Image (cartoon, one colour):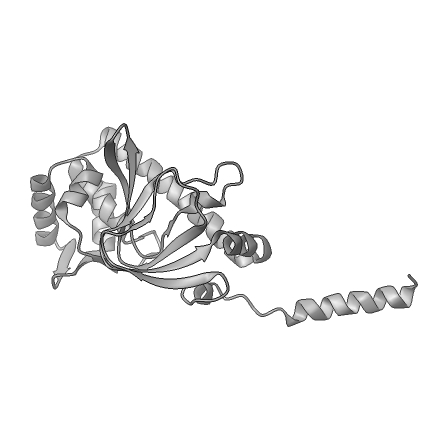
Length: 234
């Protein structure tokens, strides 16, 4: 291959790269496309089961999802997921791509289902998405560590407050108000590790303090900065 042929090939490669459409993160996570499907799932439906081989990641657009683990016939809730969170990430593993928990919808949900193949492609090919997903995973690890610390050292009231913030996907740059689907207090009690009666008492107290407000029968408005300050101050 002479120099002119090599230069021609390099120009063709450059032109092919220039024709590649601009990747838009918000569009990717909000619209259907190659390897991506928006699905509407009623409440109390199973998305995937513990121990089963996964073939897709689920990005929650609206609604709430419960993660549970089953050990010797006893089911325990380990997390509640809200809009802006991923479920089924374990399918991306190369060694054991099996679900470590079961996922079930708590409310009517709108979910972006992304195939494993497409997730692996976009992580490899799109630096914007790779950086976003890496930051997301680090943030989730940090938050789960905080939850563990809560269960070891903090009161049920603080654990409930942090659960609400996690469900609203709140962080330091979050919105002043978050709207989350209204969830049965039994579900919150199971995650927090307390009784339904105490959850009811704490929620009423949060409402009187202006931390939360009930928006009709289907959702709760969280005044995130106030609730976050309460968590940090106690």
